[in-house]
Every structure is written in C-alpha cells, then in structure tokens.
Image (cartoon, rainbow, N blue to C red):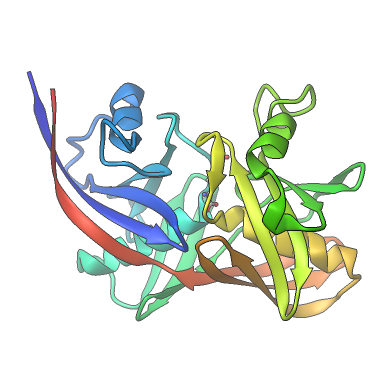
Length: 262
Ligand SMILES: N[C@@H](CCC[C@H](N)C(=O)O)C(=O)O
C-alpha cells in the first residue's frame, strides 16, 4: 500500500530540510526507514534532515528533528530557523515565537527572510589537543586550520567523527579559519555523514571557540561565513560561560509538493 505525504522544502544558508506539518499526528515519528528514504537525494525528496512541526502544550509548536540517516537528532540550529519560517508561512505565528525542541525551549524572531534564533547557554568547554569541544544543542569539535578552502573536509571530518574518542556517539566536526571581518567555517555533519553547506549549532560553537581563543569578553557578535551563506552569532561571554546566545541568518522556502511512497 502506498502513502501520500505533503511536504515543504526549506533551506537555511544551504542546510536543506524537509518540513512536514504533523499537527494532526498522522506521520509516524518512529519510521526511520521512511525518513531516510524521504531525505535521499536520488530516491526521495532530498535533504540534510527532516522536521515535524507538532502541537505541544504551552508553546507555539514542537520541533522534532531527524538527520538524513533517519535517526532523531540533537538540536539543529539551521533547522530551528527554517521551522520558524515554516510556522510563519502556516500562519501559526507572526514575527515572534516560543517553541520547544529536543534541547528545551527556544525563542525566535523573524523579519523578512532572516531568523534570529535563541540557543542554549553553554558553560562546558573541553579541549582535545588544539581543538575545542562543546555542546551547543548538538556536540561539536572545532579546529582552527589554514587554507580551509582547499581542505579535504570529508576525509578529515570523517576520520575525527569516527575516531576512538567520538566514534560511538559521533560528533559534528567544524574547521575554522579567520578572514577579513570574521571567520570561514566548514562542517562535516554527523547523521548526514558528509560535509553540509552550513551548520547552525556548529557555527555557534565555532564562534564561541574563537571568542575563547582570542580572549574576548562581554557582549559579542561574530560573523561566520559558511559555504551556503552568512551567519551571525551573538552572545554574552564571561569566562567560559556563554549566555544570551543567538544564531541569525537566512531561512528560505524552496518548494512544496506531495510524494507517494510505495
Ligand atoms: N545542521 C544542524 C546540526 C544538526 C544536528 C547534527 N547533525 C547532529 O544530530 O549531530 C545545525 O544547523 O545545527
């Protein structure tokens, strides 16, 4: 028996997602095979991940996020920005929202095609030799490199993501290089198992790592360029504690349709 699923496709700085309005609860949250198939770029719709927008008490909506491998993921920053645009387009919200995700409540503001998304506070930063390791809603490894444009991000990222320290749970691997007016970041994403065009929780972690690296303090706004666009991370830093954290960047509707899965 085949099923028909209505979907919308959004992208945030090139991190692309399938969005499904599941306020009626008809989509089976546990069908990992189906989610993997929908995210497949040859046999499905294609996407770095899939999100369900669901009803929940005390919030405008709940965001349930899956990586392209079909497994439920940890927080997705660009996904969070895209689901806010989706909720606005569904007329669930207007320009401001409070919604629930896997790492807790998030607030966001949308103006035209830019979404400014509140992220969790961070106060635990670890070191793995020269790299910084932290959780900004998802786990991230951040390493400063030279000549990032020519780095083999798949090869280097795959090796770190699968090494004996991170292999079992995996980690998202970010490489960062300073440039005029900010930083350039490229990310190998766990769950996609490939380089993506942007990673919001990764850009947030990379900005925090550089604030520590440069011994910056106070209210900061750090521009992060990624393969698919421009992100801005702002926070208050006091020692290794980051509060009032926001991830800002584009979130755009791409297309919508109906897919029949046999
Ligand atoms: N693309 C995301 C990160 C998604 C989560 C991640 N792949 C994981 O589950 O580890 C972002 O924009 O933050």
